[in-house]
Length: 232
Image (cartoon, rainbow, N blue to C red; front, side):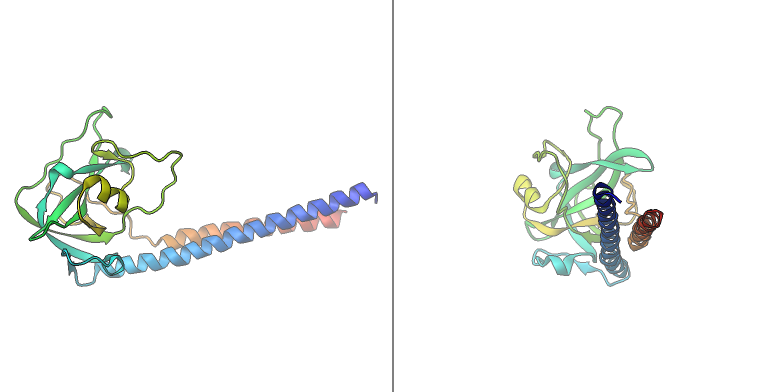
């Protein structure tokens, strides 16, 4: 065997080893995601059957508020309503309607995701949303503000239509003193908004499937390397 052929064989073996290690690394990553997202899912499901908490101006500990059934009483601030763009429901484009609820007896608000509304035919049009007047009491599930999003270029929201809702940015642009969570409203949809907050399927199942796929790729790469070595 020539030196050139020997080097080529070693290079092929090195590439196969790198491919195997990459596949194993991706499988480990998916197992980690299955574990962390599975734990989050279990907390969320437990919150749905727990005793609801009453949101108040004094509650500022995010960790104690997050992923809980909650109720809130106050008045809507429709002038501060925003529309979260690019939300799909049953294959149709639309918005999530987010409106701050000023808690009774305080200046503090909780930002409420009231549900989905279809987008008008023309993107330049803004959908009309009916907002009850007077004091109301609502129920829902607390969730976190957005934390990380991939953007080619960060742009500040313009008008009522936003692409992302991050806590610090929302506080700054709205000028409101908001609780550190968003409340996903549940209950009757008499206001015309669709409150469909996703499937109860545990996301860990999907990540376990991805992990198995990467392990199969690792086995295939190892088999290819072994057969190539036997052939030589």
